[in-house]
Image: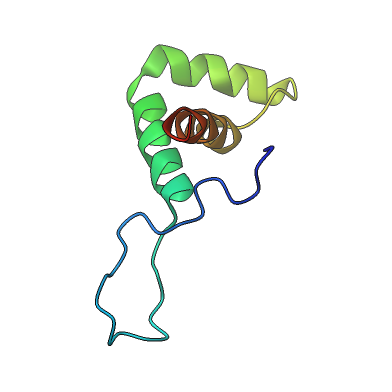
Length: 78
């Protein structure tokens, strides 16, 4: 990933100033990767193709999900 801060802001930020030291929850990157993974897992043909590639060293479903999340976030920041 080129920009290490890409998508690291919270997906659902809390905008109340009196809340301090509260965990920010999941990042936008993680949230987008979860959505991508859900789509991949719901498509049997795509899932089988990725699992075949994973056995050949071309990346796991999680790695590919983060790839798609990163591409989405790059488009958002253009």
